[in-house]
Every structure is written in C-alpha cells, then in structure tokens.
Image 1 (cartoon, rainbow, N blue to C red):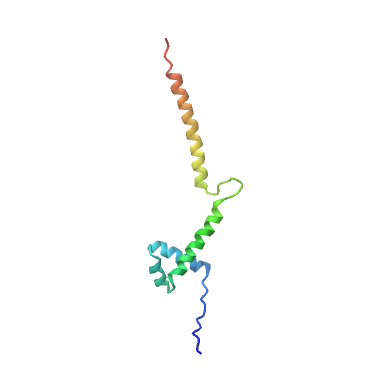
Image 2 (spheres, one colour):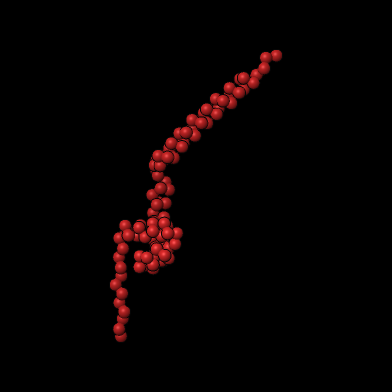
Length: 100
C-alpha cells in the first residue's frame, strides 16, 4: 500500500495575520487564498481566531479604565458639553423671567 503522505505545513503568526489582512483588503478570501497557495478554509479559521483574540484583549480592559485614548477624549468632551448644556438651560430660565 502506498500512502500519499503530505507534510503538514506550519505557518507563522505573521503569515496568518498578513493572509487575513490580504483577504480583507481584497474583499475576497478565496482570491487571497489562491494567491497565497493555501486553502480558503485556513484563512477563514485564522480570521475567526484573530477576531476572538482581539475581542478577549479589548472586551474588558480592566479597572474601569478605557485603553483607547479616543474614547477617553470623547468621554471628557461629552461631560464638558453636558455641563455647558446645563448652564445654558439655567441661563435661559433666568433670562426668561419677566418682571411684572
């Protein structure tokens, strides 16, 4: 009996990330897989694992501190605008009072 033994290929994490990026850039996993000479199911699997890993790393940043500086800036701006809005509401109330 002759067995066709195929050597299992091992891909680096960098290759996997680049394959996922290429598929995303192309908008077509199958095309990217053909270009790289691999089966599209590999890219689909890597894509899922990468997304799951990113979700785990960013889902709960811990200690209630946002890690994203843009989010921190937006929250600070929101608090400032909310305070300014309250001041304007009070001013409208004060200036709306008409003397009898």
